[in-house]
Length: 209
Image (tube, rainbow, N blue to C red; front, side, top):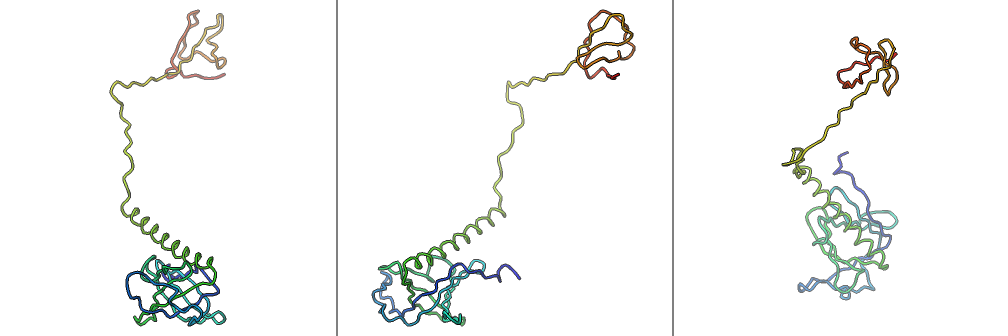
């Protein structure tokens, strides 16, 4: 099953009321006080589901789960869901019947907390949609990172330490000397002498006895 076919549930409210609303006379917004709130046209359960980038507000029968109406939501806030101007518990949603016909209805919650959850669920979904869109753009056009400059600056110097092993000759020994690392044999047949020998590590093959 493709990701676009997967539908997740992002909010469920067991009680919601539906109201017939008068046409909006001006751009001042809808007012729930004009809806005859004591006479809802329908009551049931509300579920918000998400499929890919789109959300769906579904009004269903509490017992059977039969769908009463559905409002597809492409963006929020937007024309599909609008808050009223005189209450935080009521909204106007645009329902569709699948054939292209639309109608605006009022929905309301008895509990203010349910209305808050409804609002936040839609906000969170479309915040996620926006983030996914930004991530996709960044993946297609990755921003170049800072260029690493490993060159020497003018006047800059470095110091290199080369390790040296010091050998001390032991008088009356036969081609053997002592170093800080123990007794070792003289390489290449060096003759016995009281002279102090300083030989670079890189030129002295050391053989332990």
